[in-house]
Image 1 (spheres, rainbow, N blue to C red):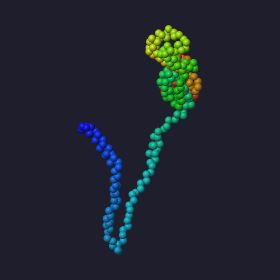
Image 2: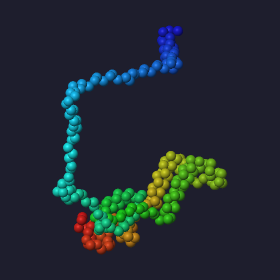
Image 3: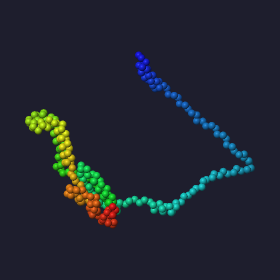
Length: 251
């Protein structure tokens, strides 16, 4: 055994023996610290004369300062106290606006912009965002499209075994598609995703004020401008002491 092997074997053995000695060694005794206090030196007392009375001890008390509030400062604090904004009297209080848009068409950014504009122009208005779903047949086809994709890809991959078991002769188109199976499967996947996205989109941006339709992108085939939407909502606000279209003044 050379020196390197002896060192590799001896060093772990020494560490193991050291750990055993620390584990089974008795705990060290606790040192007790004396709590005795040194004797206090005697207090020097002045000599006492029997015929001379002791002077009384007076303990001086710090003067108590009574702080009286300054009426002028209190009045200033009342004047400069920040006032909380009161939205109950806002131009849009009690009005509910619903923005129903196509979520899969990336219309959410436009909806958020219109929401902030309405809340700024008409304080107290309630603006809600909702997804406008497509028609029922389109929703059903969008659910079936992934199944069609998987079935078409499986047919391209194992059509030579599927058609004989069904008793069907493979069509000539199958062999031409199977010759370039990877390109065919990629094309099926891309076309299926595009069709599914189209079926899930409604292209809608509908604006409702208190349940009444104010603007419809499906009917107008365009988006409303901010000024147009503000005028449409302002014309439907209930009358208030500050005027019907207070939002136009604030903006």
